[in-house]
Structure formats: structure tokens, C-alpha cells
Amino acid sequence: MAKSKTGSFWLTEQVTLTSSTPVQATLDLGSYVDVGDQQGLSVEQVDYIFQRVSGGEYSSVLTAVGAEPFFMDVQLSDLNPVTDIISADSNTLISSGSMMQGADSQSQSADLYPDNYGKGDESRIVVNDQIYFVAETNNDFSGTGDLLITVRVKARIVKLSTKDWMAIAIQSTAADN
Image (cartoon, rainbow, N blue to C red; front, side):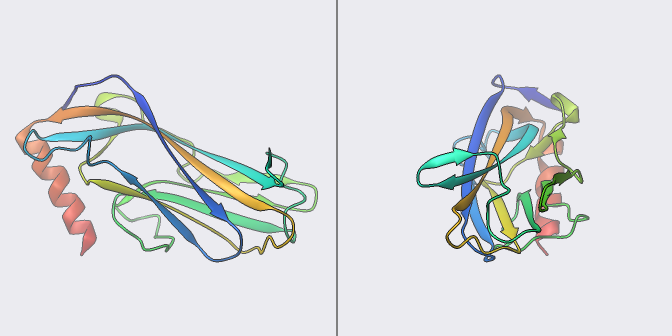
């Protein structure tokens, strides 16, 4: 289906949650996706990292952040959800995960997280020129620091056949309607 043009590399983006207002960041793929050459981005793995920052110091200990218990949802998609968490049955969903923080406990829910797609035909191929990272929480972190969520995407550039390029492009367009 796809022939690798590069080895694997990492793309990263970070959002800052300061309140219960959802936030969105965009990963620009314009340098990697090329319609004329039928070139796409093969997503092999997606990881999320949750950190607290207070006074310039970073920590993975989240027990002192805001009111407890609280949750965080994160998603990566290839069509713009405009800071909305989308349904798990959406074809645009690349990866998602959630974290719950209780008084003395922390848990991660594994819906699509961590995503380890693999290489070649096992990977998730994206032909859009951007992917979108959305995060939300039910918490207000006033006075306790902010919550940083980083997405790390392991990917490679691939060349697709004309038929495969069209099939992925049609699916992406159909998912937009």
C-alpha cells in the first residue's frame, strides 16, 4: 500500500489547561503531505504526557492540581473538531485517551491510547495538511499551577499508489460531511 520515503521521526505539540475551557493545537503537516506526489504521513505511534507546571517547575505528580477528583480527555484527529471532543466512532479520530486524578490515585483509560500502529500497512495514514490536538478537563487549576499535555507522534513520510491516495482522500472528505 505505502512505500516509505523516510525513516521514523517525532512530531510534538503541547497545550496548557488552566481551566475547564477546552483547548486545541494544530500540527502542521504541509511539509510532509504532497497531493501531486501522492505523499502522506504514516502515523506509527501516539503518546500523551501529562505534567503540572507551577513556578516554572515541571512535575508528573498531579495530586496538588486543582480540585480532586478531576478528569482530562485528549484526542488527535485529522479534521478540525474546533475544541470539541468527537465520538469514538469518527473516521477522523487518530488517537484518544483520558486520565482521572483522584485524591490519592491516578488512572489512565485506554480507549485508543497508547496507539502503537506499527509500520507500513499497519499504520494510520493521513493525507490532510494538518492534524488537531484537543484537550479538556472538568477542573479549574486556579492558584495550583497549570496542566501541560504533550502529544508525541511517531511518523514517517510515505508514497501511496494513486488508488490508495484517492481512497484515503475520499474517506477523509466523506468524514467531513
